[in-house]
Length: 438
Image (cartoon, rainbow, N blue to C red; front, side):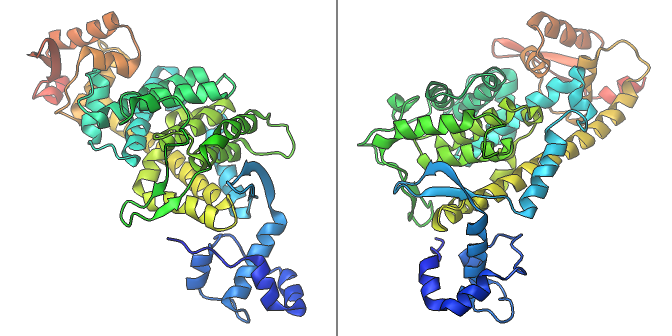
């Protein structure tokens, strides 16, 4: 548990007038790392300062630059934020990579190959966002379920399917204004058939429903959200903030607004369960609503899952240090930038694999790009099981087109067909590469 820093009033009383003036006029205190009090206590102290004096100087500088948000804590104290140089640089990098079409990877900009990256990203986000909240299944099993459209076997798979279908709806919802009704719809879709109390889906938690954020290991209470009777007004205030136009004053960068929306819902915890998944879905809604269309192909939960402690710590640092949202902003900017880089790296890696596999197909002239994509995957992953439905979902084509694609590959001796349960499945022949070379 992070310790709450000493308050500025406490420190001012200890400093005295002369020392106070000296510390508040210092200009050589870099704040790029944005240390919390716990980190300041463990970090080497600048010469001539005590730990408390260094903390006071840092905190005073931050307070002088901070802007208030309409978000208030349970006691009515506002949350604050501002952009450090490091945060502005991260935002610039996000703008360059995700905010326009100039630097888009050609594979994503190309409508013919775009869908495979879109579907892959949706699956990744659906799976990892659910795993953050406790879904216990492997990526391989989850992807097989989504591709073949089989029914989920347990609550974990249902969580993933719900997330996947909800993220698909974002393409429609992104053009709508955010309203409490839309948030309820998002929550309902995300939590349907996954809650212990089925009546809790798509509605605010009630006064008698105690909700706390608890450390799984120590069972220590980390966060007590605002009272249930305040949630209706808080939810409307959050929607009003989300719907403000970009040219409103004070200016809030769209990605800043999206991250604050993520934090806001997670802080309020307006639902009995499913708050984390809903908060991350709202982040995507706002990013897409403001034209950052590359976020359809980016999974932030994939990055968060790798370091869940840092994700949780970002919330705690904000709440323990006077409602300073910069801790969460800085963490999420780093996550977004890493997720964007991961997309570019993934595309480069997959493109290389596809080029190598495509060299075996080049010159044949008898397979369309969807069939080539299937054969490329079969070469890279020989144990993959295909169905007509999985091919249909991977390329968003009609069932008839998918059936023709797959059966043609069976006819040409590239795939084997066998019965599984009441339907057919397909897998690559054992000597696929040899046949292609011939």
